[in-house]
Length: 452
Image (cartoon, rainbow, N blue to C red):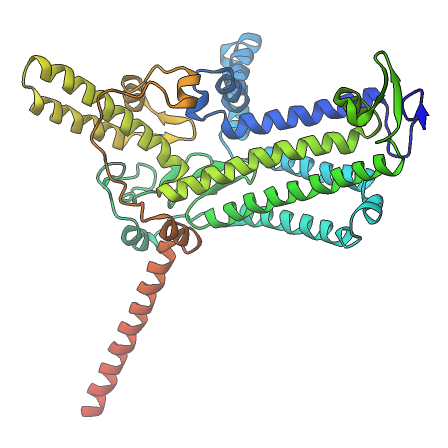
């Protein structure tokens, strides 16, 4: 059969303007997620992605303060901005959690409204039960990360963290926490957002309004894996429903009159795209959005598995990056000065002093903070284009000495420690030893009384 005009409206069709608006929302959401997750990566340093990430996460707060001071006056503007900055910018707030819920529940609603009733026609009816089950499990895993203890350090578990994570002498050396007044356990960090010191600090995540640390990193990894599977699963269902609808109506073999003459949908990708977007916009846009999420979340999952393989946390990647850059700079200076005179001793002294400064610097989600850290970051900065960072070109001619990461025990052991936090094992051993000591002491007392 030949159709002289596009297929008419159906129960799952929507207006073209509404389709464009919905598609624009999903595209914006996908780009927003990409910028939030990867904007601070070294690969995008100096690019528009990094600038958009800054203005999305921190820059808007700075701009708000500037605007308030200009409109309300310096004194009143500072006062108003101080209140807003305290409650919105510096404190944990549920904004990103609400964004997450809107995306997940909104995507689920779109599929239920436009594709759920067609599941039995094009895929096995069991998917009608599997989908809400997987959706519920995904939300439960999200709540588990939100409410989990990241590994907050307190007086009761301080000794266990000292024993579980030794100082490496490079990234971590014994020093006092100015806020808590204790010797800082290695691999821990004080979170300025939640005002807690967290063991094996990885990063603060706004999607959970919680810190990711030693005790809940395993829940975070499972969350990523579950959501990659969920997005891929719903994308498969929506694709199967749309393909089944098009095939059932005979549109794969139907011909449409175009400016280039009669064409089939399978022969003209542009015609097929226009047709699907116009008549099946909700499911098609949802499909595209889910594919983007699978790529983004899948990349994030692979990245964290890569960090586990290296025996590092997200926080430590910034520390190691600046250590290696600093060491590389010192190696190049040593090579240049050695060519003219023997100054190896001076270079060694200066190298150690530089690492001491870096060891004292606080490193956040976007790199070192504080005056000394800024100096180190500036001196260690390398000028490489985005293409060079992407392809790994322009490698340095002078190689700096390799520094061993004592926390890297191999992928299997590192992964085991993610799902079985070492500080918890040490705390359990200490508790058992304490119980045995108490029991032995009690037995000795009873024996002495019996002898008397």
